[in-house]
Image 1 (tube, helix red, strand yellow):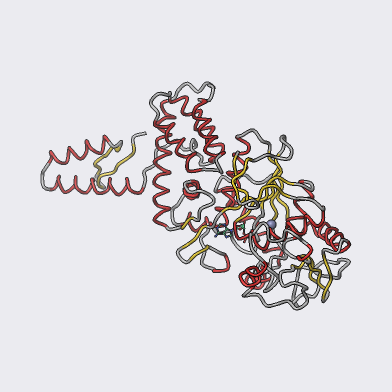
Image 2 (spheres, rainbow, N blue to C red):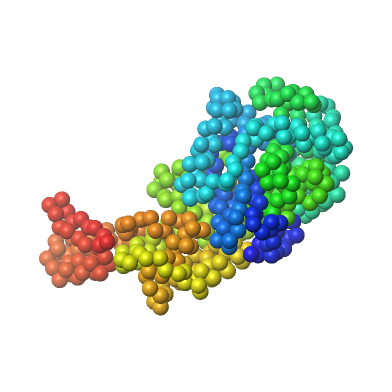
Length: 468
Ligand code: AMP
Ligand code: ZN
């Protein structure tokens, strides 16, 4: 498999440390509000990556954290803890907030057919692990205590800017312009590992530690959880591109300082979902959730389908018009598959058509080209040289990765465009009947019949159903 590595800025051949098991870590949600569909785009991409590795024969051990402490509004160390913000907003404890939004997140994963990672763990369950790592970083003098807080000294990390490709200057100007300078840090980009001198007098989440009563910084949780469950070296670390700096940069600095050697081989990042004002983000307040899309009549899997049509490394602009187009295409695709399914009576197991399965694997192995993988699916469906049974077996195999529930439906569904067209034809037929133009009325009935629509004239008016 070839995949783009943010660390080398190149598409590289994927070679796992242990060919029997790929170790994959993916940053999880900060559970202070619902996940928006931008966050979920990143989780869809990570799901596709894991399932592609499975298709290629790899076993994958994947870990995801649930951030329920320590994520500060600015992503650096300025501003308020996001969990505290939510506590105030909703009048609940941080724990109640975390539980509520974690459950909502799990539901989103189900709605989008995203497989839950083998290990999903809460940040607050690993405080002892953070303390142990921080003590070691202090011992090795990568960390220092100032004003009661423990900071990581980035000047001790020689490759600190390698992942982001930033220079020290644009780090300070670019990332920190909205951040109040912390005068207790040795370098402006140093980051907090543990805070005891909280700026917030009402800080609810705090723990005892050798450095004083306090709470962990955000970045430490991912390094510790990755090491605890996957060992000191991992193959893949994922997230959205906004995680590259400072979050993943800081994870590398502290992990490599702790182990003394390279930590993760492949850094793979998904691009943004944008709305018309730019990056969709929770802090903007006005963001879209799966529940909202459902309440407007959209199938969450039409959104997954829309994401798969674009490449994970390209930005995707969301609009309802493009979701409409995706939903129509998705319904049409499923209808074609239902027809194939209905034609197959013999469901015996046959061997997979090698050409198509190879083409599908090649598309996904090419830096996860999901839209080409969909093209392979379409080509297979319209291929007249292969039997419907062969097609069905292939579709089932493709759907293990695509996860679009392609074979689930039994009934043909109409797209919105088709419904509008049918309504128009029915109105034309009614008008024709009123004008006693029975020839035209019959022609319309026949046209509809050819479209697979059966109409019945009842006392309440004309009704129609789809020929299954
Ligand atoms: P958070 O819950 O804010 O920690 O973010 C969860 C995941 O969503 C992270 O991997 C982010 O990088 C990613 N993310 C945040 N905003 C977007 C966006 N607009 N489009 C795609 N991914 C995003
Ligand atoms: Zn993380």
